[in-house]
Image (cartoon, rainbow, N blue to C red; front, side, top):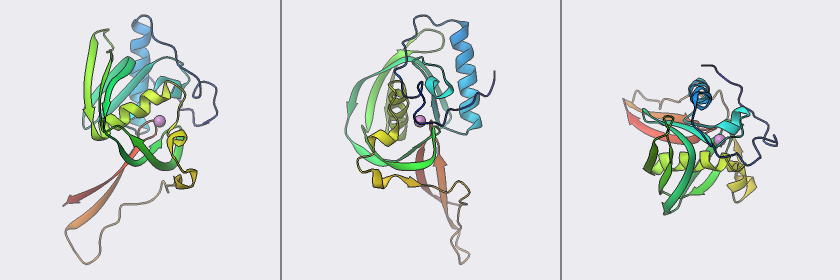
Length: 190
Ligand code: NI
């Protein structure tokens, strides 16, 4: 297991290429999964696609709300609805922009043991899967932002700000990063 370098050059040949289908799920693919999980968690992010670490194979990892998904040859077979929200990407660090995605989907593929999986997802999880599947075809979220002027810089050092006046209500700004990310603003009571 190892933390691999995430390619942050959005013109990189592998990041921009079409990844190959995995013919056989063997130990080399399982090692790739281990490295991708370590790399995603270290970033930290909620998703990563193999091309982002220079491996042109159709392999993704997603970890969202405590559930880890490891998928080989993922294919979105059904999708429904649309929703627009800010997204980012570990390969395009510190930039975000509004991307319209399906709100729910069904994805097929195989897991790290070679078993067929069929995953139903909606909301942020569906968004993350769409973002990662895009990576396998060399597509970045910046390609999907309709108006390039909407792509904005997000200060990586920006702190959560507590509202003044001793209120117990705290605004938690949580930046959830998928292969570079999905950003989300969460209101929480403390
Ligand atoms: Ni990404």
